[in-house]
Image (tube, rainbow over all chains, first blue to last red; front, side, top):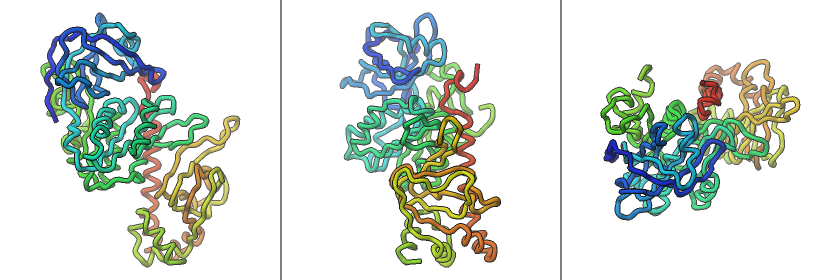
Length: 280
Length: 159
């Protein structure tokens, strides 16, 4: 998993497209308005600034298009939950926002080559794992079975509905479940770990990627371990209060880890002992 | 019981921990039963005298709410066991179940299995070891959903 290379200085990026995903979630595509940042890897995050309001950490949710290793275009899906994310959510094409990064560790997708790939996402956690799917599908023959299991609160909260259909058509085993079905919903109802027993993959040759609320990740990890996925081939994306992104300020400390630097992607062997410690 | 039924049950992981003798005794009470999409397997309040091993398709557990119809609370997929109210008094279904799509099942006679549990403690203990995790797993899943993990802070009631 690669290390952070970002700086403390925001670079100006301009919103070039804004796609409304759900009632409170949008996907923004950004283009550099000055010197582009270094290239991001799937799993890494940026600090996005709504000028005059504040800065928030948002994961990369699309593959960079530039071939020169720079982040000329960035794609971020974000949910309006606070003052900064509400301002970013409202940003229309042409709006300039500040971007710092890339920060943190990556999913290290290429290390899963030759293995089955199981991706489990809950809620907005589907956004940071989207580049894993894109990477795998871009080099499909390098990987075995590909499984994507998604949990959402309601059908209306599902992200990337069109892409889910496209991924399924491309041979990905896509399982979707919701906590609260609406009228007409014919899919699964229940928690996302419940989809794991019926998914077709070889646990002994699987690399698993999990992203979502921490409690969901704990139960998902348990279900994957029960299926026989080795703990050292299970990666989770952890989140704390990322501020500087550079391991200076300590706001994102989780035990011995500074998650802006040593995370967000962490091997479950390191994460598991920390996820159940109170006050961490 | 046929060898075919035994092999079909053994193909799915749920009963793999049963000894061959116990598996044979269990399968003696079973038979394949398919259901077309939309067919109801049981309704809330009915006598719980059977349980099912889902071979293919999925079933929905539901609850009728006046004015809102049958509300799905959970779906169960291939490999799952449907129904455990046959194991505990008052032997009444607490929820209903309907085939979500064409459903292939092995249906077991819950009354016969329960009677064998009473007379053969080793068999009864083996069945409890299988069904208790089902009950706890569904309890855990329900508790997780109560937490409303995917909600935004305002949706979850946080200021």
